Length: 345
Image 1 (cartoon, rainbow, N blue to C red):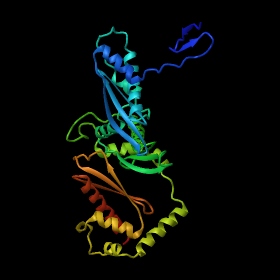
Image 2: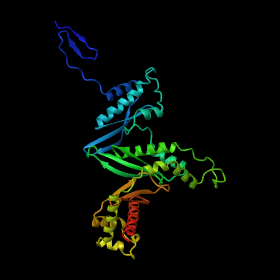
Image 3: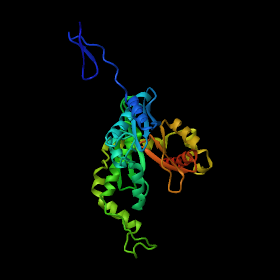
Image 4: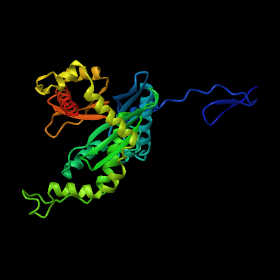
């Protein structure tokens, strides 16, 4: 007669060495559900973000169990829910010293942020928001984000985004998505700013009289602090590049076309046109590309911001602001036309 013994992993094995099929293990979602049922708590799952290409999306879920909260992501909703359930289980079981039925101890926000990063970039918190706040504290202009490049296959894209504060401070970030690249650039620039001495605490209508710094003095101090770094990051214009830029400008001045002729007319004024449509017509006529970037952050006065990149040589980027996204684009188009009007004189 065959005798059987229980294996440590729950599978049954016979005395003659034959193995019985392993019973299916419980998923993190079911384990968390059982644990919550014992404590009289219902886990709550929220889908908070979908990123990536259409054929390969990445789902980001947030799970809340009592005072515990974690996030998890996966290539499907099911995988993302299992990932976030496992993250919550790790938190809960790490505080399992309390008897069943006892309230769950809250987790420190800092440690939670370090444990689970929604963007899988190793950066805790919100560096974009922190950089914005630090710029306000240092009385600096708000950070401006500009796309630099996109490389790789459609399902394995790598994005590079530059973050700039005025003309003296800049950093670039690289990531698998634009948001991750933006966070990387913000975090690098945030580290730079934190190395600076703190801004003057005195508040006065006359900062110099109060012993503090004026805005000009602050800008000068920052410029001097990073002058060496700034200069090292600016590539010199090679002879071949200089020739190409000159050829492009001469070619643009000599080019013909209805839109370009209208723009060249000294009596014409872009302010009286449908700037957005006119710029698109001009780009098509002169064979250059337009790339529109809607800036997520609002301006200091609460208006929408936009950038338009012209694939001219050199590449030109113009800024626009407006009450809504359409008006911001129209303003950016108007500024781009003003720039081109100057270039073809």
